[in-house]
Image 1: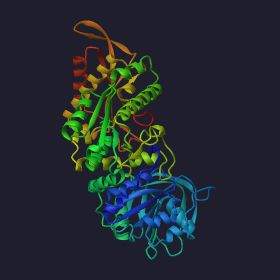
Image 2 (image 1 turned 180 degrees about the vertical axis):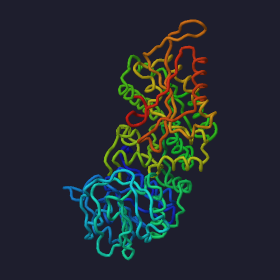
Image 3 (image 1 turned 90 degrees about the vertical axis):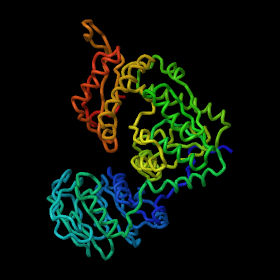
Image 4 (image 1 turned 180 degrees about the horizontal axis):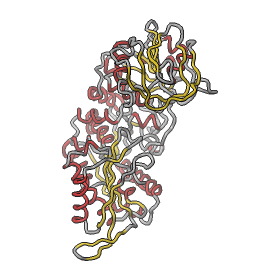
Length: 530
C-alpha cells in the first residue's frame, strides 16, 4: 500500500512523560515565541507552541498546567490584530501574558492600553513596587529587555500593578485570585537577567509544576511511540552523519531493530574521514543495517561546469533523491521513511503551530510525495540541544553528538565562485582537517557554533616559498559563536591558534599560499558564504 510522504506521523506528546505536566505557549506572532517554549523546557517543564487561535477543545484536551501568551508585532488596536479570546482566561489554569500578550489581556479585561509617546526597544530599567507572586524574591531594581510601542497605562479591575519602567507605567501586573499575570518585557531573552527566575516563579509557585522534565528522560517514550507507529513494517533512513539523522536512526533501530535499513550516500562532499566515521559508528559499532553508496563520481559529473550556488544545491538535492530512490527500489520499497526533523524545523516551515513560514526546510516537505513513504519523525517535538541530550542518553558517540552543523550540499557550497572539482575538494578537505584538528586540540570545538574553511575557487595570490615565486589558492577561515544560528558573531580565536593553523595549511597543502580570517558577523553577513 502506497502512503503519501506528506501524511502526518502520530504526534508524540512528551508532556505525558512528566505526569502530563506541560505549559502551552500561544503564539501571537512574536519573534521570541519559540524561545519562550525553549526557556520553559530548560526550567524542567515540557512546553509546546500553538497558534493563538488554537481551538479551546484542543487546549482543554492537552490539560496544560498553564498558558503563556506570547508577544507579537501588531498593535492591539490594528485592524486584523490577533484577538485574545476571553475563554482562554477562564479555563481555570494560570495565564501569563508577555508583551503583546499582556496588552491583549489588559484590553480584554478593561485595562487602559494606548500608544506611548516614545517606543521602548532594547534594554530598560525596571522598578519593582510590589513583588507579588510573579516577582517574588527579585530585586527592586533590575534591567529588562523591552520591544513595544503600545503600553499598559492602567491595569484591569482587580489587578495589582507590580512594576514600571521609563515608558511603561504598568510593566507588570497580576490578579492572583484569577491566576492571571502579565509582564511588558521579555523574560525569555538573555538581556533580562532575572527572566528565568520570573518564569520559574510562574511555573513553580503559580502553576505548581514539579520541574522535573528533561529531554534525556524521554528516550524510552520515543522508542515506544516509534514501535507503535511502525509495528512490523520496514523503514528506511537517509543517514547523513549529522546529529539529527544519527539520533533519529539510532532511536528507530532501538525500536524496531533490523526492520530499519539506513542508507548513507557518500556524495564525496563531506569532510575528511567523516564518511568512514559514520559507517564505523552505525554498521560496525551499533550493528545497524546500513548501505553505504559511493556516489562521488556521479555527483562530480553532475556538478561539472556549475559555479552558481543555488544551482549546486538543486543538483545535489536532486541527485541525492535519485540515489535514494534506487536504494529504496532495491529494498522493495519500505513503507516508512525516517527523518531527523526537529521542532524548530516544523515551526519555521509553518507546521502544526501555525507559525509563519520562514523557510522550506530540507526535512519538512523537501522530498517529493511520489516517493510514497509514511514519515517517522521521532525528534519533531525536540530542539537541537534536547536532541543532543537524547543522543548522549542512548549512547551515541560524543563526536557525533557534538558535531557542528554541516550543510546538506557539503563542501560544494564552500567552494565559492567556481565549479566543484576533485582537486579543489581535496584542498578544502585538507585545509578543513587542519582547522578542526587545531580547534579540537585547543579545546574550543564545543564553544563554537561552526568552524570551517572556504575556498574561493578562481582566486590565486602570489607568494614566496623556498625563495621561489608561488601562485596558489587562498583559504578563508570562518568561525562563529551563536545560540541558534539566527544571529552569529565571529569568534575571537587566539592569535597563536590562528598562527598554527595558517602555518600548517601553507606547509602541508602545496597548492595553498595564503590564509585569511573572516570577521563578519550575522547580520550583515550569513554564516555560510553561499
